[in-house]
Amino acid sequence: MDFSKINTTSLRAILKLSERKETLLAELEKLEKELLAHFNGNAKLLSGQTVKASKKEKKVKIANPLQERHRAPRGEMKQQVLKALAEAGPEGIKVPELAKKIGAKNANVHVWLSSSGKKLPEIERVGAGIFRIRAQG
Image (cartoon, rainbow, N blue to C red):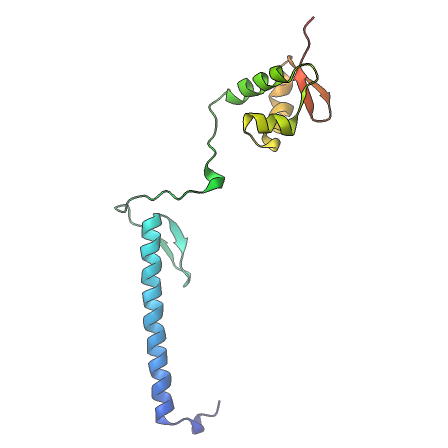
């Protein structure tokens, strides 16, 4: 940039634009703080600063479908799995079907069956990912 070719009119225009930019950035930061106050959380601003909402603000719960699931009470999965296996009968049930039936994730059911489930003598593995209640007799 050749400064010898810039006149005072151009410099004034650049100065005005620069001041307007600073004003808009300050206003944007203020709006971000207001938004965060409504959501009552911590987050980073575009400028990189972290802002924590005040405790006086009301908490606003945001509907998030990924957070709608709640942890079941202790022993609840055992009861649900045993009930579903009993309903499946002697042919057993595949883990994905079992998970869908009890409203859990496939991975959680696999882990439960391979850890807690194998300690229960009434649960029997029939095949790859297929379980049933052990036949008595």
